[in-house]
Length: 172
Ligand code: RBF
Image (cartoon, rainbow, N blue to C red; front, side):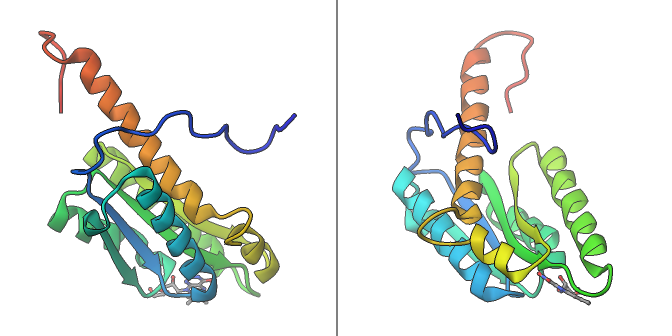
């Protein structure tokens, strides 16, 4: 019995041809974030997102992810933005400050824009832990981030359909 992690994605949204998705990737630890990006993009395309509807941009480091995501939101109005980064613990506490900043920044965007801004950031103690989570052949958090974005888009679509035409329900 598998306990850790989430269940497999049960359904993916239909009619994805018109759905735009942003991806913002940190260039720090790019050996890791590059594989996350390729697995993320692959998963989106496999689900039916068109290549021209994937807006993929780089930022210097993970700390810049929330602002990079906000820039994409402001300019392209995507259905979701996926933030990909890898923060590796060092000798100092920099990772704590960076990770807290990103987590709060990304959560703020979710609630402000009422759409998914996905936390695809590895917060690891060692390079080995990072590589284990960004392996193209097995586990890859970039792929999982893509699935989370699709699942949240589906949830939003479903809820909207449920209340369509009903007086008194917000539909935005
Ligand atoms: N950015 C990352 O994405 N991953 C890291 O592991 C990482 N480590 C950093 C360590 C230190 C001491 C500093 C100052 C920055 C680090 N950054 C890292 C970069 C950070 O996210 C950001 O790009 C810079 O601080 C500029 O705002």
